Image: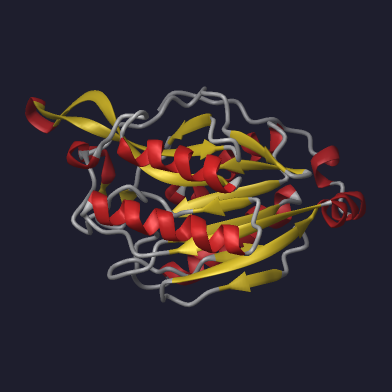
Length: 273
């Protein structure tokens, strides 16, 4: 009654080919420990500190997602990873069209389960992600993937600051909330990251797994929090792999002891910005 998850806290480069080599290594690390699921950070296909946009975009049948599918089929390890897809909105002053910050899920047979397109763009703390990226549709079906005895649901990075995003994924059946991120470094940012992951775990009685990117300008600090708010895994800011076992029975017990999902009186309804 478990699912084994490998967290890949890695440094992502501007060089897409180099990132694909990294993905092969990550799958090898996960397969060596008989993991069921590998989680890579936001922007795993390509990242630059100055911003990510259409220049980093690849189609779903492009090299990066194709490699995820090939490696998943070869190893039997499912995967969740951040990517950038081509968008259709023009940039500022009718400049080059924008990209889409997205997360893909691939099952252990190599099939593409689905795509989540980031709803909340990071227009905060002096950054404007919306200048380079277009937001995903607010009413899209949440992305979930069944791995072992657990259902994993996806949001990404800045979405973590919006509790209704997590609740909507939990309403879709998620037992585990996966948050790939390139959480930008800065005053109190690591503290916010840990606190928000803990809050989302407690209020939804789920496991939260925040998978941060390592490297300059980002915090790393991948963190796993149980439904009781206990931090079960917390990395520093260095590149590393960690593998953890999640117990479906323990999650059931936590929800029986704290039936907050049953006792709530409000639902989440998407609205246009």
